[in-house]
Structures are given as structure tokens and as C-alpha cells.
Image (tube, rainbow, N blue to C red; front, side, top):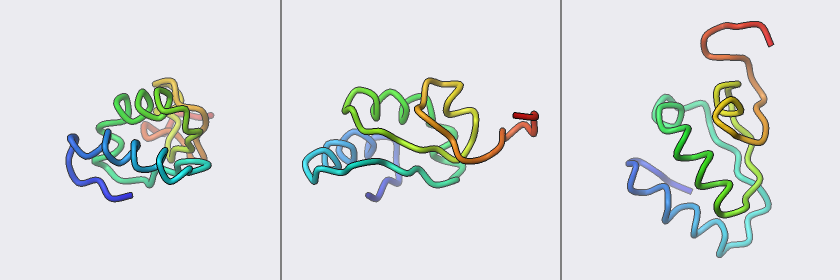
Length: 75
């Protein structure tokens, strides 16, 4: 999925659902991190299990992260 602006998130997630995506893996992109609350909410609303690069996503309600905290806190 390609997203380059905030307005692209909803259509991208709808497309993922239509394509029967099993999961969503979000890359460690500063833009995505800045919009993490919206991304987490959309993934939940569309019932797509998602993995995220930083702990802050799970603190925003995301399912799981596979990396450390951006702030460098100990997990």
C-alpha cells in the first residue's frame, strides 16, 4: 500500500480489506510514526491485525510492536 498524505490512510486500509490482507506491517517511517494514533484506529476499525515498529504504537492501542521505544525507554 502506498500512503504519502494523511488523506491516503483510509483508502489504503479499505483497499487492504478488499484485497483480503491478512495483516498490516507498518514501516519505521517518521510520517507514519507521527500519524500513529490515526493508523492504529484505522487498523482496529477495519479489523486488520497490525505490527508496528515502535512501542509508542502499542501505547496508542496497537496490537504489537517489533522494536524499541522511540524515546529509548527500556521495554
